Image (cartoon, rainbow, N blue to C red; front, top):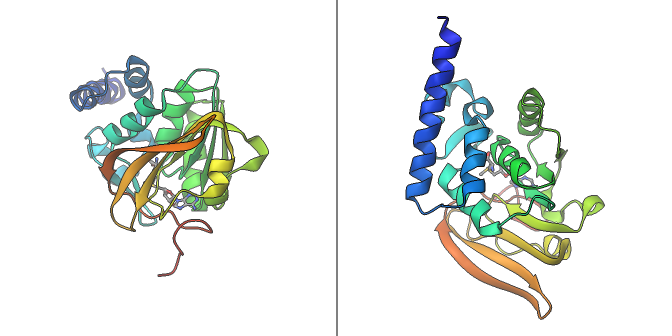
Length: 222
Ligand code: SAM
């Protein structure tokens, strides 16, 4: 037996353990757990952190950025309650792992990343996995992607001083947006929902994301 199947089996075992850890943190939506089973996280990470790929931890991906903690990504997905027919916008492609998870749960995924190298790397892995329903853009996600709006859900995976109005404007009439709001180091993950009575919000959990840099985020140099 060659080394490749052994490695695959090891990844699979570690993936199951990660799913168990996510479940223990209160995620019980089977469609979300299944998505974690279908997407190999290690492929989205630099080789230097491969051995930690299935730990429930944020991991460095270069350019002073991180791949988010899997259980927190699962919380995003469970909170948004995505339908298979829905259209989703993600701000902060990063490694592309969460983008791939979203593609298992929604019809179309649009994802914006400001660091070109990260977007290029994510595109290569998504192509390798032949995930078809994802469009990537390099640019400032705080202004959204009006071409494909409105979106049923918007996920922002970096911390903002407040909710960018441009993103709220690109939500569908029943759209919801998850975004960390706070200072540059610590935030609260906030769910905004469009209703007939206007936009309402509730806090989901405390969190600590890298800053959302851009026109309606934090200034890049400070
Ligand atoms: N979900 C990603 C993952 O697990 O790999 C999260 C990546 S990281 C926590 C947040 C990402 O947001 C970084 O890659 C960063 O470059 C990106 N980012 C920050 N400000 C941005 C902006 N205005 N537009 C697009 N991406 C931005």
